[in-house]
Image 1 (tube, rainbow, N blue to C red):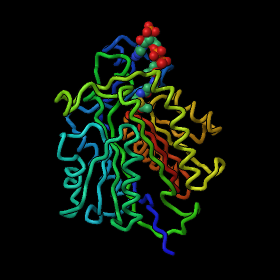
Image 2: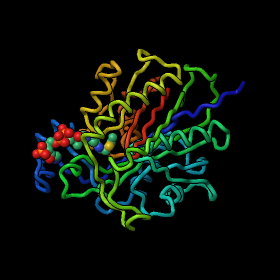
Image 3: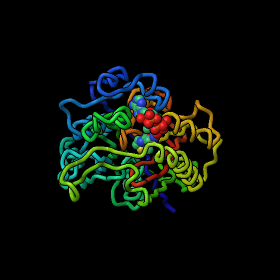
Image 4: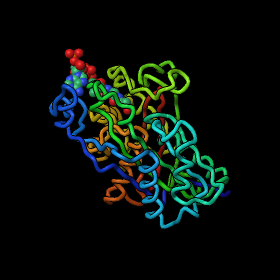
Amino acid sequence: MKFIRSEIIGHGHYAPAKVLTNDDMAKIVETSDEWITTRTGIKTRHIVENELNSDLSFRAAQMALQTAGITAEDVDLVVLATVTPDNTTPATAIKVATMLGTRPGTPALDVSAACSGFVYALTVADNMIRLGQVKTAVVIGSETLSKITDWTDRNTCVLFGDGAGAVVLRAREGNGDAKDTGILSTKLYSDGSHYDTLRTTGGVSSTQTAGFITMDGKEVFKYAINSLTQAAEEAMKLADINIEEIDWLLPHQANIRIIEGVGKKMNLPDEKIIANLAHHGNTSAASIPLALSEKMSEGSVKKGDIVVLTAMGAGFTWGGAVVRI
Ligand code: ACO
């Protein structure tokens, strides 16, 4: 029987030119390179100046189409994960689809699941491909978190950055087993009892402002290691992949201590864990596709590799995916 998989045939990433170092942060709030480095692992972050989310998304998606060797005319669906859209409505994905030059009528939507956004968006696109509704999808994670950062709050402002990453998915016939190429499994979760633990201080319906990110960092930290591990392990179980078969674990890039905690819990050597947050900070929905595309561009993540994606963020939301590149 025919079994459809979504294969990653292209990847792209983009970060704005302006870079803020930890020393720059120390001029904005009372902090130090030493504190930020030891508590988070972050050294620099990229910050937008005159660009919008749609500009970052467009750059990442354009690179993804180029590496896939296809044009926007071939795209049947655009899904964009973000919590920092250009406008409350319409969805930024629709603007990006038009900027890319997709066929008139091509469906496009935004997905809001905070730092788990890319895994959620990937799941939406994968399921539409596997149902046969679309053949080729561009899936983007893009954020301008600097626009919802409280630059007077040292508890949060040192953590975040702006950027975008994207992949092109294409339907491909497989056997339905773990030897297939493409997305082998996805698993999503949410738990609204933590709604207030990590959120913005405003919103359209409540305050008519976007608000700023606020959180109970210690509480988030506590849940992050467990939920990232749970999502990775559940996705591996669904894909019928064991820990020895993994080439890379790609966790959401929030804090190096969280990433190391997940690696330890899963018994994975450091060499198999992807971490780029030293250069980007936490870019929420962009963090996984940005890191994936960087690693694919430098050739360390290559054809045939098994990559386990795992993410956790506001909501709480969390989720995992297993992909054979
Ligand atoms: N510079 C200097 N001191 C600081 C800073 C800063 N930037 N920020 C906080 N501090 C101070 C605090 O005020 C506190 O001082 P006090 O003891 O006098 O009150 C002290 O440092 C210790 O603060 P802690 O909260 O104990 O520091 P901790 O080791 O927990 O690290 C951090 C804080 C980095 C936020 C950590 O809790 C964390 O990473 N949590 C996860 C949250 C996260 O990453 N959220 C991002 C979004 S969610 C996601 O992506 C999964």
